[in-house]
Length: 286
Length: 347
Image (cartoon, rainbow over all chains, first blue to last red; front, side):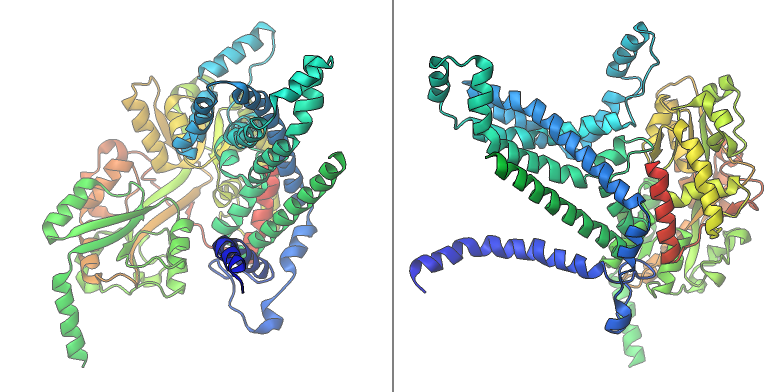
């Protein structure tokens, strides 16, 4: 082995081991668990030989009722909406920050909310959206003015979406900012010299160049949003069950590890499928 | 050899000074702890859990060293069957006679080999006194939680527990079945009752309904008796014009009896036994009830309990006949109930 190869292994080894230990191994454990029987008190039933210890019953159970597929569809829809709103809000923000002389301070402000606990920030939305909050009262005053029925903001899909967008926004802003900051101003000047309007300069120069940032930001938002369970639990109403809630429930309430593992495997497959489809679609565009 | 072992044990007993207690959040008064620490010249270290599943999961994951745990009945049964508990030496528990016979010899621990009753909560109806009076709703029946006729008046101001067992049990009771009914057809009927009522509910809620009741955002809940007591205390402290009251539905309800048990991994069983005996003294036991409004199985405690709590039929029901403790389901039943719950949540 020559020096450069040793160097490469020394550099790449620890992160690879880390990934192996914390992604591949748990993934494999989960896959095995999904084919096992649940134990009486939770966990897995003891293995009595290969023939009796393994089963496809959790997968059969998953497909025996469309309801689980419905939960998936709903979760994908919620994650897609979250990603879309994050993109719409984050793009102008990232653009302004990238072009501002005070950009370092502004980026710091984007990161600042991470300084306080995530749960506390979600709970804060309970107060902000509660029926006696200024926001709710203003909203309902306007509705009354138009003769419409008052609405409840808290405990609704709306509350879940607002908090989802709020929680994931920085993950969209930062990759977009990292991309936009590298754009060469001269390109825009050149486009202007050639007669491009402000909109044309954005749509035909800035936006296509920023696509890698859009993709990575979207992935960073979409994937965690798909597995989210805290926000629907705290702010959701009577219909806001997402796939993350269902998985958590299998482990902590129903004590059905094999079915929980099956749901998690299906979620991983769904994410991989969506990533592959997005990659194909993105590949065609580029 | 045996004597040597005993000698060693008694030696280590002298060196004991810390009792490791694994308890529910806010489930013992600080003053009680202080008094015990003075009496035994030892220290009490507490760890907390907020539901049985969490406690069982942590023990299953290998948490050890807890001398004393306070699980609910079905969790006690689960721990007994896992051989995780030490049998109790009753000769060290003279105060055990203070416990009312109706709370002894339960299905989860016949003969109380492993467990001593500590306190209980009932899952019932909590409500905002003013709003319910204005709307003239009957709170003596689960109908107020499940019947659209009543719910229409109070739409969006009702929450129910985010617990499949508890909510389905309430619906089963409303339908006249046992809370422990395992007939899937009856579960489907319960699901239909819940689905009809659901459009009127604001949320499935685990604990934040305490605050929502106390601020007046929510007027009617399916909740735990001690949480409703807490909401009332908070409303009083905030000087609200309403009270938060509890009502035990006539169809019956779920009772959760928490018991003290000795975990096998604990190193101080003797100290733990003296703590159990201490907690069985009426005054100490009453302190908990006065703090959180939980039900108390201790007959000697009654005279120390604030009359406002002692006279409350939602905390100390006159008739326990309609109250049921939830039993564990096997995994197939759990899986079916979880599917019904998913349907309930999604529709």
